[in-house]
Amino acid sequence: MAKAKQAKEKKAAKPAVAKYYNYIGGEWVKSSSGEWFDNVNPANTSDIVGRFPKSNAADVDAAVASAAEAADRWRRTPAPKRAELLFNLAEIIRDNKDRYTQEMTREMGKVLKEAGGDVQEAIDCTYYTAGEGRRLHGFTTPAEMPNKFAMCVRQPVGLCGLITPFNFPMAIPSWKLIPALVCGNTVVIKSGEDVPLSALNLVKACEKAGIPKGVVNLVNGFGDAGAALVGHEDVRLISFTGSTNTGRIIAEQCARDNKIVSLEMGGKNAIIVMDDADIDNAVDGSLWGAFGTSGQRCTASSRLVVHKKIYKKFVAKLVERVKTLRVGNGLDPKTEVGPVIHEDAMQKILGYVHIGKEIDRATLAVGGNRAAKGDLKNGWFVEPTVFSDVAPGMRIEQEEIFGPVTSVIPFSTLDEAIKIVNGVKYGLSSAIYTQDVNNAFYAMQELYTGICYVNSATIGAEVHLPFGGTKATGNGHREAGTQVLDIFSEWKALYVDYSGKLQKAQIDEVEI
Image 1 (cartoon, rainbow, N blue to C red):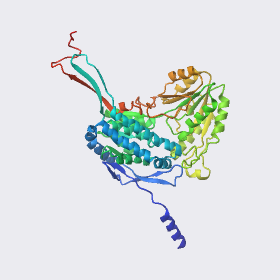
Image 2 (cartoon, rainbow, N blue to C red):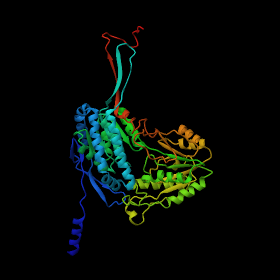
Image 3 (spheres, rainbow, N blue to C red):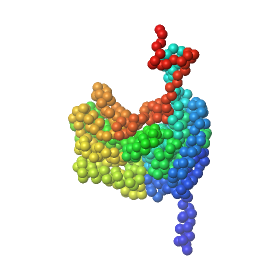
């Protein structure tokens, strides 16, 4: 009886798992499916962050209907007024940054400093994009006929479906949500199923900022909810960030339905290290680029292309530093590398380690194992891993691993290095370390990527410049900067003829 009583008391003392809801039409509601899924801490799988509704097509229908009902009112709201609400939103996110950071690390695993940077990016994006409410520039141009005025303006696309990934749980949703709203669109967000709390925090902040009911809607769930959103006949635009394979499927569906689609997908990014580079600085950048967010960035520095003259010295310094990296729970301020997102991701990464050793026959210089000592056994941790003696064409050199694994590849000339960097199907980010300004500008010209850094890693994009890549990385659109407005708005050309008579452009001859 005493043991039973103790067990009961222990169970009673255990905090209840918090339940969260979808946000549809300004109301927080359960899924019509009646099903739930657990949001699990990847650093400690016994820690359930929250329980979320497993949404289905009926929930998506309700969210889309709500967004459609709110569309005209929001579209007709003057853009400067929309911007004022978004400025309020930025203030709310800023005021809650510490809490959002802690909750993001708990559900996603990235270390506290990086989670804080993620939230800060959402703040920066919101402040910056709110300013577009007083711009949203079109332009005027001379008409070819007399007494005629010609100009163009932006108009909203309509109802937008936003599908976001796990690795930047608040930054990437903000990249899509804020420009969509400032342009006058209504939205339905399908959050990443591994990180639903951060997207929910963003939507709650929208509610608090006074964004009208129905303008922003959130459905939680898995791929079937995403597919229902992509396939919904009333959704005009899909903005997706995720894997190249999933993006291709979405693009095919949108093409059949004549939807606008914006895709941000994979990367296999490389840093070139020239023989005149500051090696210690290059090693710092390589560590940050390869192992920040445990390598779970589409911009991760998963290839290090190093000049043969300094190759051995660079590898030795890199390996020495990798051995000192602290792997652990991201909530510990001393942790430098957190867990990967879930078991499937861990097994995929370890599978690539096997490929690197047994099929590619590269040299495993450090790491390569699951990190499972002590408390790490309760999470999905992979040792920071470096392969050396990697050659172009090896699978670990060509394929996106999306984990804390990087490959070091030797080269002899800058042209050879550029050929290696460009020799993959992706084209997101690249970098070069050099003290030679001529080499720097030549590389910036020849590297076929959407982003290029000099004397820095391949990660660290800022919100006021366009973000995106070439080839299989995307479909040509750019997020962030003012260029993102071209995703979420459409151009309208306007002609005003005040001549008092019919004038036919390209036909009537103008008297001089």
